[in-house]
Image (cartoon, rainbow, N blue to C red; front, top):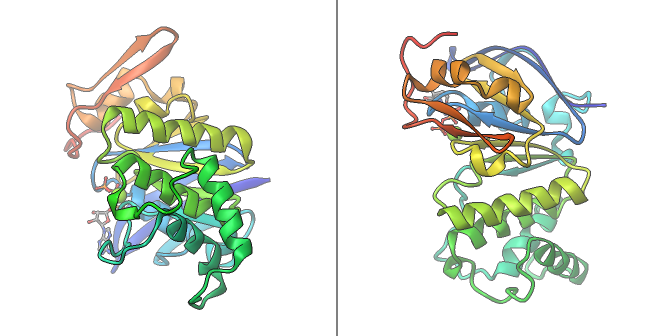
Length: 262
Ligand SMILES: Nc1ncnc2c1ncn2[C@@H]1O[C@H](COP(=O)(O)OP(=O)(O)OP(=O)(O)O)[C@@H](O)[C@H]1O
Ligand SMILES: [Mg+2]
């Protein structure tokens, strides 16, 4: 079964297209790394798949359904979380929120079944024992793992992660990347992960999609991540360097390279 299928998908805001004519298929269980400079349309694509944005033409299906009919199958971790950090929520409460949100009303007391599940998921992301720590006092990498845990609470079949590594230092990036590998290996979840730094995620991604207002390249990492393709989007200073059977990408700064075409 295909997890996501897009055919001639054009996403717009007020009639102005942000991403044009995208066609791709993502099989169930695969992890797709979505790469592109600022303003390329990465978040727009994730939001359209998740039914948060509905102005589009062409076809987009999630497990054979229209996105808005597939919402219970989708977990979404936004580019920047909207938790009000003035509210002193514990790590456990934030994770548990992922288990009650879908019922559509607020609970004053979180059901004990949800608490038990949240503890298990916290363990899964390597934060067992941190239940009662305040979310706002955690490190960036720990916060990101908490947000992943929250998204896992609904047992999604498709997990959409918008820049889960942004604003993290290299060791926190590696920690979060390890949790993403674990999700990939131990749960049958399809993932789409947007990132500016693809290097820590190369072990997780089955496929890479490069976009820049349109589809530039889609395929296996070694096919997409070539000097020619990367330079066409990120400019002449971008590089793909082979390192021990893998590649290392230097994409420089992330502003749109004007006039860059394949
Ligand atoms: N709510 C909105 N209203 C109008 N235009 C928008 C809106 N959201 C995004 N856009 C436009 O759509 C285009 C794609 O934006 P998008 O946020 O999807 O890019 P992105 O690849 O996620 O960028 P970044 O790397 O900065 O997160 C941009 O030109 C942006 O200005
Ligand atoms: Mg974005």
